[in-house]
Amino acid sequence: MALRISGRAITSDMTPETAHLVPGSDGGRWVLSWLPGRDLTREQAIDGMALDEILSDLSATDEEFVLELAALRAESLGMRLEEAVVRLAARILERDRRQRRAEGQDRSPGGPAERPCPRPANPSGSHCSSGIR
Image (cartoon, rainbow, N blue to C red; front, side, top):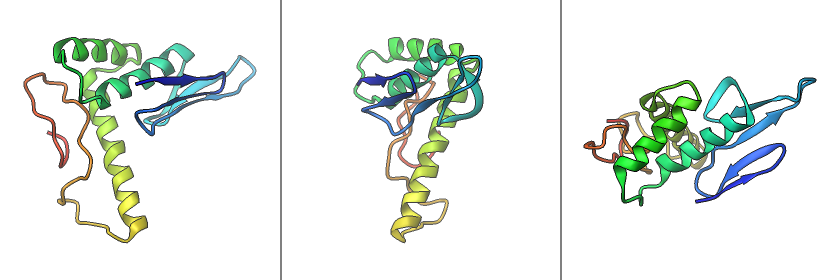
């Protein structure tokens, strides 16, 4: 799990989401691919990318600590962890739909997803593979 941070972009070796700098006279603003329409600081963009990686890493063993860390990252973006999970899950589903369309395999909305959802906000919840639970 590693973020690549430059002066203009933040990418991940774990997820396809990105953050990029939109230049401006005041130094610019950062935008997350999974949180469009929000102007962020560089620190918030890093937190948003780190949050995506945290929720995408299903190998973490201390789930309570991971969820606490994720909640802090979400808070820095002005949102609750549950909202971040829903937004990231929606991005996964949209990417899957676009990929299926491109491959000519579009399934009905009730069909199973091919990727697991991000870690649930409820520590006792189970990881899902066919939508948000």
